[in-house]
Every structure is written in structure tokens, then in C-alpha cells.
Image 1 (cartoon, chains in turn brown, blue):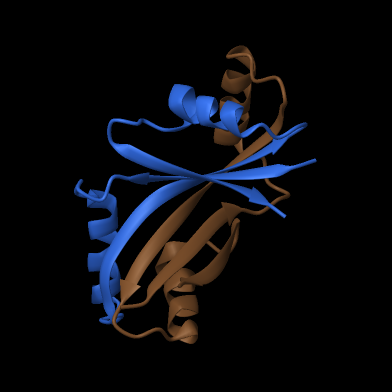
Image 2 (cartoon, each protein chain N blue to C red):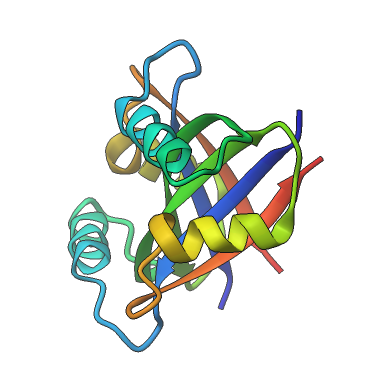
Length: 77
Length: 77
């Protein structure tokens, strides 16, 4: 059964406050090589049949908010 | 500057209730080909220098909960 990986991330122009918090925490822990952190979601879908257009429709209708988020679709081998 | 992608997912043996909710919503929207959904986090780190052992340490100390989560580290080209 094909597995589809949808990665949803905030658009680059938007401030990622969770990411900034994690960056601050990593810096306090001594990981001073970290310059920037951005956090997104990864949604693994197990589908009976893969149809790219239908996965785009899932993203637009439910999985991502196209106003503030980008998404990427990958089929896992 | 290297970009490191850390993907954090619930261990396969654990129930992913958010994933189950999304699977139910997709099914109600007519996407009946979806058999299973699991949701994880993806954390993109921009680092001044890449040291795999240090990224493992970040995961163990902050980014993942090793009791219930698995993580995977990839360096983006």
C-alpha cells in the first residue's frame, strides 16, 4: 500500500514562534551552533491507491492552511 | 549553512489519536482511499556547523521524547 508523506510548514515570511522558542532553549542548553529553527508537521498517509490530485485536494481541504502554510507531497518508496 | 531536518514521530506501537481524527475527517470528506494517518513533527535546524552527535544530543535532550517517540536526522542538500 503506498505511503504518502505530506510536510506542512509555515510560509517562510511568517514568524515561527514555536521555532524561536526551541532555538532559544537549544542555545541555553549550549547548542550555540543553531542559527534558526522552524517547526512543521509531517502527515503520513497510507492510501489504497495514490492519486496526486486527490492528495492535493486533501491538503487544500484539511491538512494545510494555504493562507499561511506551504505543503510538499512525497511518495515513500 | 547546513540545514538539518529532524523528523519526530510517535512510536509505531502507540495509538496516534490526532492521526486517527484526521483519518476520520478525510473519510467524511470522501477520501475513502485513506487507510491510516500518523502525524509527526518536522524540525528544520539551520546550524553553523553540522555534527551528527550533537544533533542526536539535541534530540535526546529537547526535540524528542525517546520514551514515546522515534526521530530521524537528515541533512538537506
